[in-house]
Image (cartoon, rainbow over all chains, first blue to last red; front, side, top):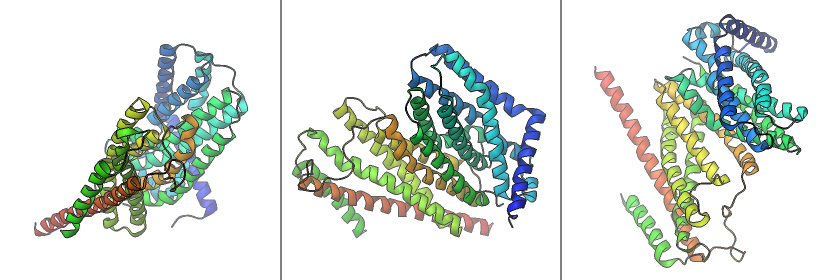
Length: 224
Length: 221
């Protein structure tokens, strides 16, 4: 039986704290993801140089860097449980939905840390025009939410398969094309001085739909 | 047997009609004829995806492996038709637009569908155990199903289209199809749809008899 409302909010919070603590103990996932993001960013910046007036390229490159960093690291939250053989124990103490929501919040936090390092570095290295912070952060935030919602669900599926790492990126990407396209279009509009409301609505709707579908699906994911 | 023969004759007749009886559209020249293969393939691609996802949802509700067999078989056929649609469309694009591929929204969509099919089948091949495979694949299918429609809104914002209208113009309207082209085209559409369901039933029967054979040999040993 799934626990009632207040219990499950407490369970989500407990899962989030447990995720943060076990990540902090090793910092293996975060370090790897940060190094990966910075390496990607450095190679992009090194091969194309500064792009002060190409806002279309800047928007695309920023999201490609973020997407790659996310795909390299976000399956970690579930894969860690499977590899450490701790998933069964976790399921004894919390409902699948609470586990998944806790992991989603953790992934979101993880992305936020990743972006806090990558995005300022990107802006400095690529030398883009000044950003409008409101629309910029809105698109970045909603894009990250959509990214985290999708990858958390795919991570839960992929962690139960053979060859998890390689499969995760391949299986997530078709679902994330929409997020990628809308986020790039939004960032470009932000730099060009156009409104970003359409893209923001699209990303928010996408995140809401994926989240809603996830809540229905998580109970089906672990049964054996 | 008689139905199979009828299907064969039907498609052959529609094809001959398309080449010998129906006229060419002036602006398109000989490349008009891609219409009889390209659009039905694209239609089957979408139909197969819908069929696969419908059965995935049914599987999650009922837990009967029959639904998973349908979903998997439809996805495998979907890949085939998706490749036919993409290649025929690409050849047509070379003839008409001068390049095989330029991320036109429709090219993007068909490529995206191919990626989803590929990911679905790759996922299936990486999971051991029938029940688990069916369950996880169905979950992935549902997520793909709810995210696909967003593509329709988002892709045109990145790239503009040159693709002919997807909706058939009514007779008398500008750009309307010649009635002979229309007849051949609709006949091909019906033929392809029947072909799809026929191969689908063959594949599903094959998977079922394999499972039965496995169960019997397991029971004997």
